Image (cartoon, rainbow, N blue to C red; front, side, top):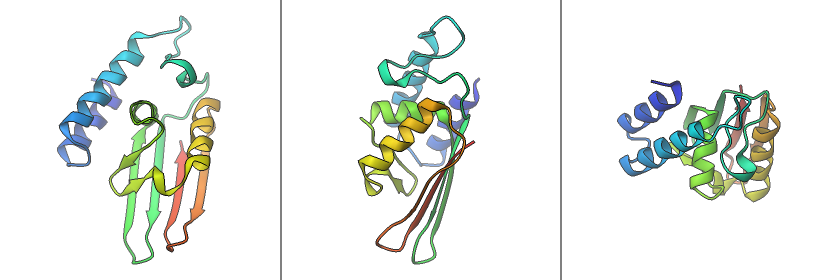
Length: 136
């Protein structure tokens, strides 16, 4: 079983996603695996063509003003599928992309397409929260 599938099942087991969300992610992952482009890269419809050199993991760190902390590490394939299913929106375990705004999410999507790695987004929000997103 692939790392991505195991990660989806683990998130389901931990209650981070619902069974319906897990089913959608697994289906999107399966669809992406069966849509090869002939050179080993996956094609996930239109803009979601996997880059030649790509990060394998996305790490999100949220430090809240009240001292709360969220650390989530997800396979990039799951992030791509979740963004595709959610229409460019990602909501996982205390992190909601709506809080970042469409410009930063577009920046994240472009970084995924370009195969960038390292710190991609570093934001201090008005409410005192601090969000960092890394591609590794």
